[in-house]
Length: 96
Image 1: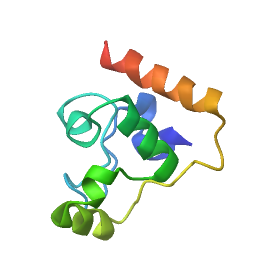
Image 2: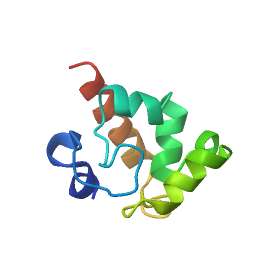
Image 3: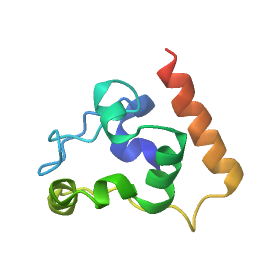
């Protein structure tokens, strides 16, 4: 699940050599805002394991391809309700 990589409470910090910051980001703060600009990008990360904005940027695509731990695509594993629940939790964390 999510916390295995994003850490307890989704706070991040798990080492990820080769990634943008060297660790898996949490769901709040500057690192999150750089990778997720809006709700639709959050949904894309969860469903596809990436976002089009970064895939279309050659440097970002290269960095994403070399990181040791990659975001898995959950499109076939989560229902719409589960996706909404994750988005609500992340939004709640953003407000803290």
